[in-house]
Amino acid sequence: MTDARAVIDRHIEAFNARTPDEEPWSDDAELIAPGGTFTGRDGVLEFLSVFQAAFSDGRLTVRSAVVDGADASVEGVFGGVHDGILNSPSGPVPATGKSVSFRWSATYRIRDVELISEHLYFDQLDFLGQLGLLPG
Image 1 (tube, one colour):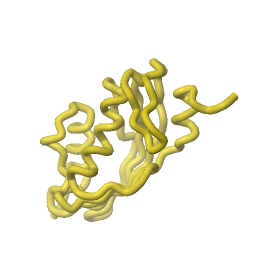
Image 2: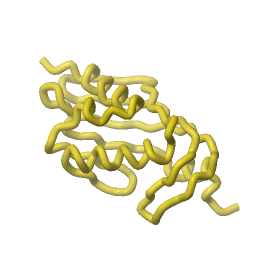
Image 3: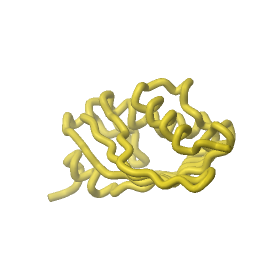
Image 4: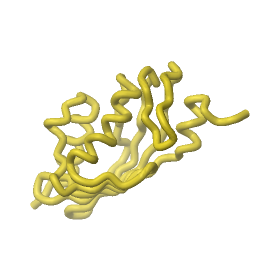
């Protein structure tokens, strides 16, 4: 039987350690997130690398998880200092030097020992506001 939480924990650990070779994403993975749908292992890792490049100390922390067989729902916090270029759908955002801490939620689907799907949600206005990118 699949241990979904262990697979998700491997993903979180690999993200935080910046070790993409250890990421458990399958070759046919799909990640749906603010900004689009990213397909295949390489597409998912490219999306994740945008946050890693923009927040060199950025870390994901899991606050809670509910697992049902090969499916899981996770809530957590992302935190870090914006010290690199953030390549956004609207173009590159230079480093602001501001710290961010925002909540995220994701639903995952696991197959064997690989992640095959993630639907990621976070409050984009909260995120952009913390970076000082919203008017007034």
